[in-house]
Amino acid sequence: MTTAMTYAIRAEALVKRFKETQALAGVDLAARPGTVLGLLGPNGAGKTTAVRIFATLLRPDAGRAEVAGHDVVREPGRVRAVVGLTGQYAAVDEQLTGSENLLLIGRLLGMTRSDARARARELLERFHLADAGARAAKTYSGGMRRRLDLAASLVGRPRVLFLDEPTTGLDPHSRGELWDMLRGLVADGVTALLTTQYLNEADRLADDIVVIDRGKVIAEGTPDQLKSQAGGQVLQLRPVHRADLATAHALITEAAGPKARIEGDEITAPVNDPALMPSVVRRLDQASIAVGELSLRRSSLDEVFLALTGHRTGPDGERPEGGGHRAAGACRWGPGSGRPS
Amino acid sequence: MTAASRAPAPVVAPRLRGSGRVRPLDALRQTATLAWRSLVSIKHNPLELVDYSITPIMFVFLFTYVFGGQMAGSPEEYLRYALAGVIVQNTLFMTTYTAMSLNTDLTKGVFDRLRSLPIARSAPLFGRIAADLVKQLWAMLLMIALGVALGFRITGGLGGFLGATLMLLIFAAAVSWIAVLIGMLAGDAEKVQVFAFVLIFPITFTSSAFVRVETMPGWLQAWVHLNPVTHLSDAFRGLLLGDASSSSVLWTLAWAAGIVAVFMPLAMRAYRART
Image (cartoon, rainbow over all chains, first blue to last red; front, top):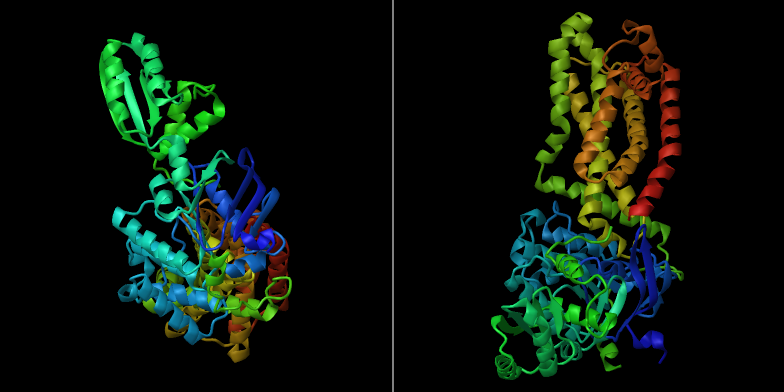
């Protein structure tokens, strides 16, 4: 077996530049057939750019991208024949009914009228849209639209599916439904590349995760590997007196490891051992540090990301820009839905 | 890799050449399918057709009964002159829909979906233009029917009528390329509308569409004689009435060819850049 056949999706040193922004600065990734690869990262990290290159909508400036063994630049037609694309903006024609949207894709793929009709019916059924099939898509709810979009990407039975933030803006129920549908597809042997901002989502669906930021891969592995790398939970401490920060930091480092970091008047540390808390309290008490706030909570993607980037920048986890960067980082993690243009 | 063996074979084997390119006949079929897509919504929302024709219908009544007496002595006499102008103006305004719907497809991500399919790259563009020409034909027929009901007579006969129809559609198809360019360059559909209005309104009123050129000041006449809308209006009116000058027909066709020569390459380049 050649490497091209071993991976359903593969990128090597992928580079893409838009006027001022380096969207992708040499990305390598690979997905084995029949698995879900989660591409995780904040807004503007380059996720959508990568998907658009794989789906032949953009040409890379350098590097190679292959889908099902076909090079996206040299054989875009062959790639298009095996992929399905569904995005964070449900790309359905709002004027058409749900059924017509699917019929359109079927006919464009060269199906006969009756085959296209049958396929549309089948997909509407599968995505719980049968009752709404005759209604214009503009009357659909957000969740229904997203399901129709996913159905549209499946008309040609793609072997490789690209899902670009498919659940952004969906309520938890619709999100769960979409997850179930994706699991069903992967069980049928489809390979999927899923981009998301939600660690939770990647955790539930992905076999492997690639974390990218500013166009670079900053971590990869299985969800478990990543979480243990970043710490499953986050300990947060705010001493009453700022003067105690250094002492407290030393104590936490002793108890929780070298990833503890000072941010403003707080100390945060990724931790894996929930039993750590009593020992931290004891140490603080012994050192007579007055505690303003002490908490233990689950890691958010934000912290996983910070922990990961902390690895990269130095032993104390501080970026050269210091505290100012955290504000910028938090902002980039906001719920905005912009995509690189 | 056991998972690979579980992957279902695609039921559709898209008919591609060895290189993965789409065959010309398939490209044509895809264009027709995409034209169907742009027209089928009328089935659910027949009022959409009224949208295309409500303004021109109002204009026909307004020009005939309000302006007609003063402009030409009697409503019927002015209708004989101005019906062609109203139709030409509406044709130009309708090309705005081409720009707006292309722009919407672009911003809503429909083009992304279409481009990820193994279809000819230009099929969505040509499908849209073809569908919009069908709508143009509908609006033109509606207005001519209304004109006839109000007393307009097609004295040019069937030949004149068919010639006028064909010429209008040729010119509309040519102007579509300007619309495509605007649709690709504009940030959103509303900007398309503003731009089109600013362009089309003055160009149709500084022509022979509604008023005889001789009544205008000399400096304006120079422009009006050059204006393609003047030639199109004269040719369209002339063919319907049976007194067309060959120069107006030739100038119209020359303008159409010139517009295509300049704007089609620009529009295709903008289309390729943005899709």
